[in-house]
Image (cartoon, rainbow, N blue to C red; front, side, top):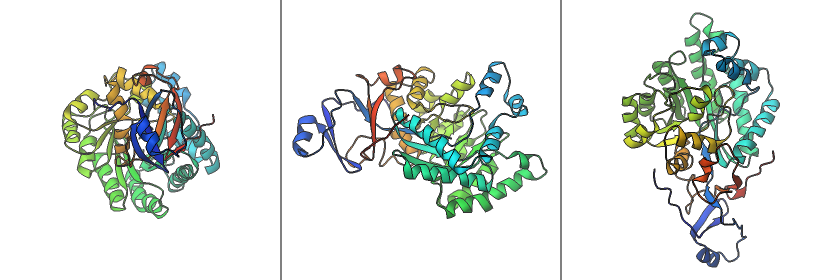
Length: 393
């Protein structure tokens, strides 16, 4: 992860949606003399960034909770005041599909303006059959209309809904609904590529997570897990045992979990924006994961409660400054390894012949400037599948 293979005096030939050739400018100009030319003016070109973990379909923001946390309120106190994930669930259930689509469309524009050309989006604020399907249909419509690539994930297992928590046997009833009602409907409408579950004490146990994800895998979905975010509960180990594409969060991963991930092809997707925004001192152990040989990705976790940022280069900054990753590691974590986290490493995340022509152009002279100018929008233009990405904010 230390070598990003930086080249100079280079040109890229694009044929339709794919990269046809990469080489010295004079050679490419000779071999593709009839091609339309785009002069990048000596600036930095990278693969389009891959944001491999977001919750971009939601209703109202939860800025009030930030102030409560600053005053010392904990998770349970905020929940008792009507906040937390359940407030997003109540809000989303009251909104129609068109309303959610318009809100999500604007957010995707913001994600794209920071250089991302591939974005994973999860459901998970519906927590009922109708509302999870509503969310996934919005994601499907975004896939059809957006100029960047959208990867859909079903996250019905984001939390136990209040109406199930408040009655005896409700947990088992909701898990049965996930497997017997939500999952078949998602499959019937082909609304998701991945299934995900929030595996954490107080949310879904290891056994419950295994039950849901084994059913999803049997139905043809690839797997992800929200794992070991706040407490070490064996989520990373379960992700490896199930052959999950990624295990995400990992701020509280155990030494055994690090060893298991390092010996597997499961991507360790780190979400440092969450701990940064919550003011938590402990981040995921990026250095230990990289040293052990794990595949490490970075993503925004863009959501209304704990990481309300669409800015993936800002996450690269946090990766460098707080997780002590090198610039090379942070770039690979948001390109080729991010692609691996959404099952696209064979076609996305590299500037190489045969790969998707997903490219970002930066107002920078040095690759190290991308995480250096923290919070700044340095992406000058981008292309996805060879076509210009439309950004109009």
